[in-house]
Image (tube, rainbow, N blue to C red; front, top):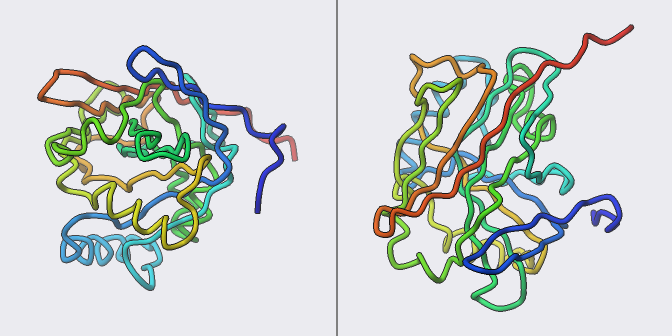
Length: 232
C-alpha cells in the first residue's frame, strides 16, 4: 500500500555539508536479525517462554506504516510497558548507490502487545531516526567496526557492534529481490542484546551509532511520556 504524499512528512538528514530530504513511502523493520542465527534461535526460545510468539522463519521483515518513521524528541505511550531498541537504519534517498544512507534508529515497541503479535507491536510505536546520516559507501569498508550503544533512563542497556547483525548489504540484496530497493524505502536492522539488569521501561531513550575510525557519532534521543487514560 502506498501512502499519499500529503500524509507522510519528509525526513531531513545532515549528510556531510548537505541536507538530504526523503519522504518515506516504504518502512520495514528487520527482526531476529543477528549475524549468528544459532544465537537467534536461542533468543526465540527465550522469548517463547515469556509468551512472545515464535516466528515461522528468521530473519523476519515487518512492514510498518511509513508515517511511523519520525525524527522526534518525544514519544507518547499509552501505558508503562513500551521501550526502544538500538538499531541502524538504511534510507534509500535516490537511485544511485551513493544515495543509500546509514543512520541510527530506535524502534519504540509496545511490549504488552508484543506477546500477542510482534508485527502488531511494531505498528503501535514510532521508528525514531537520527537527524544525521552517513553515505553507506563511505563506511562500507568498516561496517563491522561501527558501534551501537543505547541508554534507557540514562543507564547503558545495550552495547555492541554491527558485526553482531546481518549486514546492510544483506538487506540491500533482499530489498532488490523484493523490488523495494527504490527511493523512499527505509529499513531498520533489528537489535542487539539488552542488559536484563537495566529497566527498559524508562522515561527516556538515547541510541548512538559510532565510527571508531573517525570518532564520528550519530545519535537519536527522546523522552517517553504517558498519554492520559482513555475516557471510556
